[in-house]
Amino acid sequence: MEQNSQTRRRDASTRPLETCGTCIVGAGWSGLLACKYFKEAGLDPIVLERNPYIGGVWRHDPKSSAGGVIKSTFTTSSKTTTEQSDFPMPGRFPDFPRHEQIMEYLRAYCDAFDLGPHVRLGDGVARARRDGDGWLVETERGARYRCERLVVCAGVHQEAAHSGRAQFANFSGDVMHSTQLEQCASALIDKRVLIIGSGETASDIAGEITRLTPYLSLSSPNGQWIVNRVSNLASARPITLDQHSSPLRELLDPTDASFYTAEIVETFYGRCGSGVPEWQTEKLYQSQFLNKNASIVDLWRTGQLRAKPRVERVDGAAVYFRDGTRDEFDVVVLCTGFDTVFPFLPAPYDTRPIDDHFKLILADDPSLSFVGFARPIVGSIPTIAEMQARCLAAMYAGELPVPGNRAAVIARDKRAATARYNSKRLRGLVDMLIYVRELAVWRGVEPDYGRLALTRPRDLWTLVSSPYNGCRYRLGDQERYAEYVAHLNDMRHPSLDNLSYWAHMLFSSALPGNADRVYHRVRFLRLRALLRLLLMPIYFPAMALSSREPSALTNLYGALVMLPLAPVVVFRLLRNKRRLKAIRAQFAPADPSA
Image (cartoon, rainbow, N blue to C red; front, side, top):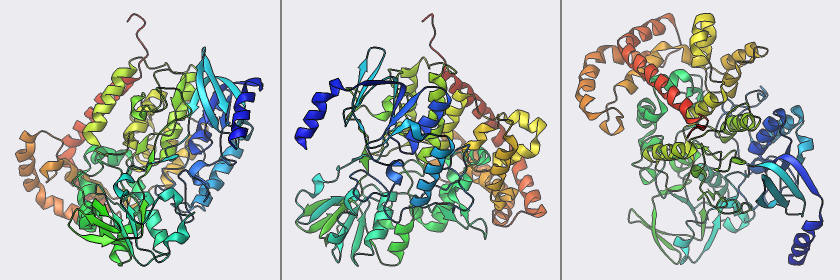
């Protein structure tokens, strides 16, 4: 094998050099999106994929050493916020499709936009280096490409993170990463197993392991907010978490100060959304990655899973936890995620953190860009990657200027992320609604709400009350305008027409009761407390009516409750206008006189 590798490297210089406009690394979901938009922009893309199949981590491959789905995996974000803007998923798909259905969708996407001729399967990128005004790319099989620009779409689940392995250096049993589970499943049968991690991967893994052993524990190193992807609290008909992602929701209960959601989650599901003492965290709601797969809570409630806090030390088979308890295990499974590295890139890009790049997509060398590495607190990577690909394709095609003051924007974004997010492991966390909107402003596809209010008020209500879907950023396409509006309307939950629901949300977020979650200045606390006391007589009926189906009564009462809070809405609209101006300034071209 080593000799064959050396032979390929020795013969690489004799291989013919193929030229292309754009070389895209990876044919996963993000790589296919980049290929589609770069093709439409006439940028001559070639996609290099080391696996013999498209789809990346969504293709079930038990032999893969990288991250990927297991047999039981289905999406944690609904198809509403996962499907692509101009290619909706089939109506027969459930709200949360299984991985087989995602692969069916991706194959259909490739066929619909004729991406197949641009994809080279089974030949990954071995190394890439700058060559004059372009890039020279060499594959693992020795093929060579010269391209004007390089777009990295290798994904965030390629290099298993072993950050927790050192802690188990003295462990007498077996230690494995979650990527090894399917290959080593037989080694877990009837063994005492400890899972390290409490994210969505840990939830998936726990469901699989409970079928193998009656003794399973899960340790949460840093605590975790767990929020079920589906709820029926607001209506007898289940409502998905993603259906709360509308512009109206963002206005009445901003995601950077979501008091209403946090209070509802903890009121009905317990502290941090689970009520499990060992998994609780002091971190604020939406200040870390949310686990939307609440199956581990069900396993804990039914006694199939034991909850453990952080591991303090290990001695042989004995594991000691922060709460003073001790237990013995045979196997430890690390669900510690993945490191984002680029071994095929030259220094310093091979190890540079993704948040050192402009908006997580553009390197200081504009010919190098990244798609699919922004990680949403709530939402999906594909819907973010689509807008990233749209913007980059337009920029490279000359439709958008290359942003000028990139270093200052990077520093500002880092400060904002540090202030809000406190994940010790993940880089590149974003608020999907805010982040995608920023890119949509750059691309020039942000909806004109004012014009819709004057010309098509009914469509405006559909747009602002429907959940996030990429087609909202395609309303400028007059040929498919009616199709997109109808699609947005189809995704709306009936309960969202209940104005008492929106009134309750606005009241709760405008006048929060917990000082530690207040994003206003402290000197206004007493004033808000007084206003809350005065408005209590109308607040409680609104809260009761918010869980009912829409009716004339619920809508009339909701409007009356909103009336005294109108200044709050006006304040937020003005704030959004200022933010919009600041967003446009981020993407301004370089000043030629500077």
